[in-house]
Length: 406
Image 1 (cartoon, rainbow, N blue to C red):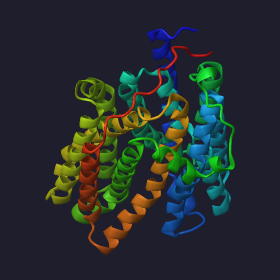
Image 2: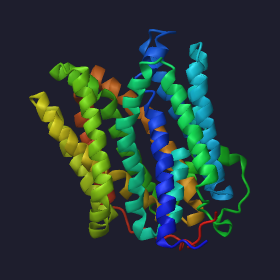
Image 3: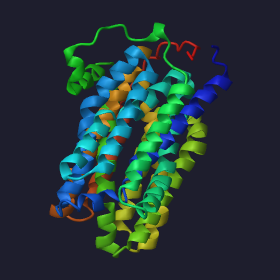
């Protein structure tokens, strides 16, 4: 089937629907998960374990799922991931003990290749010059999902604490139907990886090492790790910081989160596609890092809480340039048949930093000062920007065959 622009737009629209429903499913548990966990334990660490188990499992599984996508196509891996997500939500909703809750998140993390597979799908159907623009679909999905997911979680949570988990399972199964009956395969057979699976493919460290050996890619992966580490460290302690410094109320913090999601979606939907082609991925990524550094310092020094609203809007908007530009800089340094593995590796790195960043942020919040995650994160953002200035031009990827298989 020819991929005229109409077909490409159709494929991107369908993958966006899959992404949006997936993000809503992920974020819908936010308002109720702590209350469900507290049925079985009052320890705060047990609430944190809900996230740690998910991201830890994702770290180990994502590179392998990416490799399987390169070998067998994106649709089968996406469908398996979505079915696994549905099963994980169902197990979590059934509950009955902490062990069952943790099992549900473990299943979800192991099969949590949705985002990396969707990223690889977008790379498949995009021309190299359009990748940064099309990768914004992921950020837009996250921006809208961060608004809709918690809102739906609160609404369904009024029915029962388990209702959001069951609704998330239903969304995942709806995604399965969309993927099976409507979404076309994006990776032609002749562009797939023909190398056989090895035992080392089950080791995420080996996969990360293999990707890091690509010319210039290790540099970008370190920048990506620094960004995720700082971003997660700051965001995991931001509510505590606002409560400590400004005595902020829950409604005020919730409004900040909603506005952040809107700003992120706005920037990725309207500004990235205009500014990145004009200035290039690398300069925009550098400006994004420096802007986040300045913005977080402004929050650290802000004397009044109302000032946090415009500053946080600015930071959220600026951060919207980071993912599509860094992802494009990564994909431009690998062959097309390796994109799935690369997306799995970047997901694994993000998952690892999703654990390490909050642990570090919490430690310096408690032992250095409440605002430490902000100014320390700002330093790391500057370091990441400096590293990007030293990045050499990437080797153009292999031409993408203009076909999509039904």
